Length: 67
Image 1 (cartoon, rainbow, N blue to C red):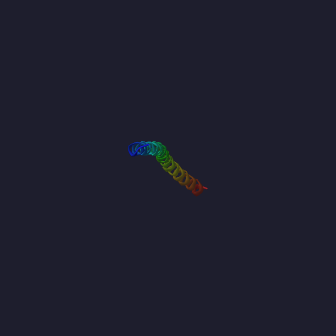
Image 2 (image 1 turned 120 degrees about the vertical axis):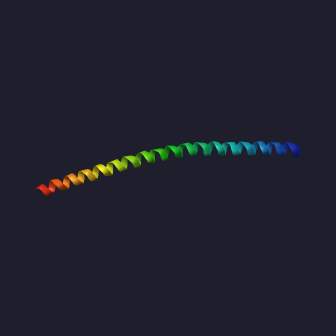
Image 3 (image 1 turned 90 degrees about the vertical axis):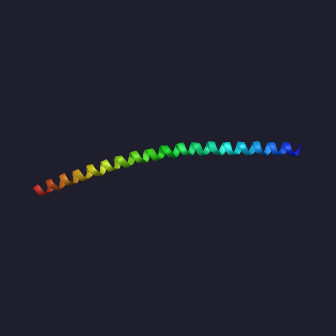
């Protein structure tokens, strides 16, 4: 194989490796975006649960005070 052929093969291999890494990075981005979205939803649910717990604790304290 001549020098030009070796260079072309090297460039093609490098392109394929870069494309492979780009595909992996894109898949990772999509996966992480899903995780972040799930985390945001969980955070909202957590806040609602905390608010409900506070309401229940206040109601419980009032009942205890009435006894």
